[in-house]
Amino acid sequence: MDLFYQKLLLIFFTSLGVLLGASLIGSISAVLVGYPPVEVLIRIAREIKIWAIVAAIGGTFSTIEILQLGIFEGEFRALAKQLFYILSAFVGAHMGYLIIINLVGKNT
Image (tube, rainbow, N blue to C red; front, top):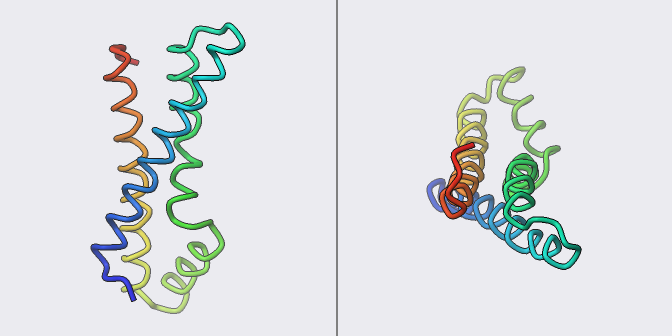
């Protein structure tokens, strides 16, 4: 059984890694096909954020089920933990996006 903070860190770094990896590796394709790689890098980073969050929390059905238990059956502890996991994934993905923007040097 994972401890709460261990799972938070795992989710955070998973979403960060998904966003950074997808953006950087995806921008290589821009070089191969002749598109400007910096623009493609920023576009991929912006568009992949939601998928990084979903990948980090392990899919949406278990999350929705836990949210349903928390709201309708009074499992507020499970609800709070799940909300922190979602927040951790969001912060990781957004931090990855900010890293990409700062590497590129654009403020968008």
